[in-house]
Image 1 (spheres, rainbow, N blue to C red):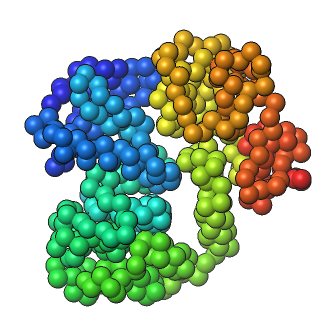
Image 2 (cartoon, rainbow, N blue to C red; image 1 turned 60 degrees about the horizontal axis):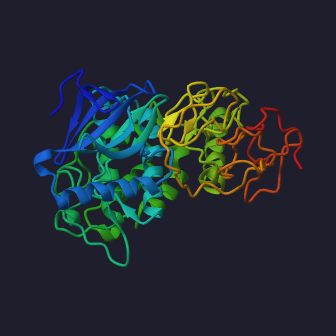
Image 3 (cartoon, rainbow, N blue to C red; image 1 turned 90 degrees about the vertical axis):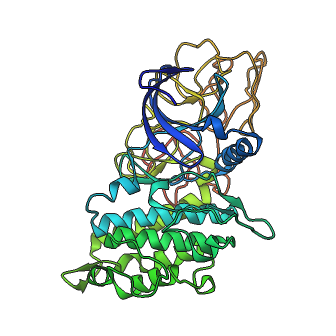
Length: 433
């Protein structure tokens, strides 16, 4: 156990924010980067070979997930002999937020992000196994992120669970040791029901549960049908996974709410928002992985990446990156991520740095070469502006796989069917080639 103001590596412990069955989570300040992070550490008395392997498995699972509504892994290592997972710090958990009244509109906005996160995990053949309000964290701009994959299971040919989960949200078959993606669907349904009614259904989950009158007064019958299917006691009657549930959710989302007991008809503004949400979701499926658009513009909430100097949706300048980074450190000028062995920031121009490590780190994102013949490393990641080893300006015109369009001003690849501005030079995309 740590005390407030105690030093731990480069971190200063500020307070304990959560405790679980295997680990404790602290809020800490990074004295190098000047940001606050969450430190997750297994209890010392439980740390044996088996539990340590479980935490390593969690690190591997989270490291392969790349979605704006899944909490990214910032770092994992041994510090002062203790195994620790470092992640971005949220404002509060959804469970904390549910202690106060939640409007139906905001609840549906949260639900939209939550089903998207679980759908992505299922598409990667990962079952979370512990979906509950405590494991959804809230960040600035009402962004929801799913965390704690500590007891997740990778679905191979068959999937056998341990019966782990949280009482009140665990699916009936999961409590008996039989886990599938349908178990996560059940837990999502229970969580949605609590958000929308303030009541937690109880076993044997007969329909309608307590609080149904409140639900019926707020939501369209089609949305209630979706919720009922997700909460079915019999797993065979539920959605097969969150991917199927998300498709059904998207179909009814636009007419989900009622006003004064009447179903709301979509206004022009609402239709525009719904269309924009579908457009951006399609964009993420096509280009989100390649561009690593894991962040949102603070002006229009469109998906953006660290490397972008402007929002491609609204044109807002992004001279500095205002969010956390997946890299182990960040540039003090532009706040974008850097690897420990880089001498220069590849995103902005300025004086160099003393590398944190003499070790040369490999990375699968190195896909191009520096044109400077005297450069020691000659490796570049997509959309770098300068070589991080010799500071040579990158002459390469980076392109997007799956798009043949490029900005007429800078020549870099753009998704002209979706974007209004070039994120690499900030100019409006009046025409693309």
